[in-house]
Length: 139
Image 1 (cartoon, rainbow, N blue to C red):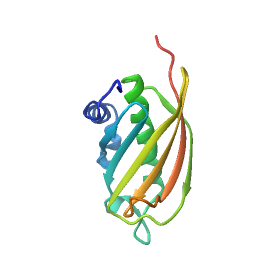
Image 2 (image 1 turned 180 degrees about the vertical axis):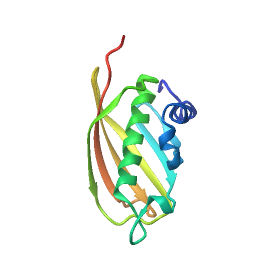
Image 3 (image 1 turned 45 degrees about the vertical axis):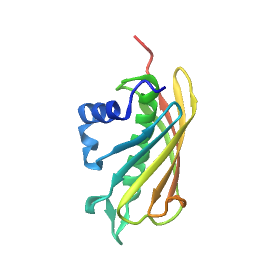
């Protein structure tokens, strides 16, 4: 059972990271190892040519990893990204984007996860992401 529910994660994110409110993230599912988050892309998320921008996809994956980690360890605002690698697989169409992630490792000081991002076809990812987060020491 995760420490934080989907509702708790969304509330925490709104209160501590209002700068990502423009994503309109919704936590569709969270459990002990996985998370699914959704967002609807808008004009500001698109690059020339009408496709979802790379920075938008990176932000979605990074926010997803942060929320997945917090679901497991609780509201630790100072957990930070130490590494994020993204492979763009195909052109994402505007509309709903879905990020499905899972923890690969949760240690005392580091957490590693991977995400697949989808737009349009729920079986054909548009990007694959691996991310590492540093967990601050407990005080």
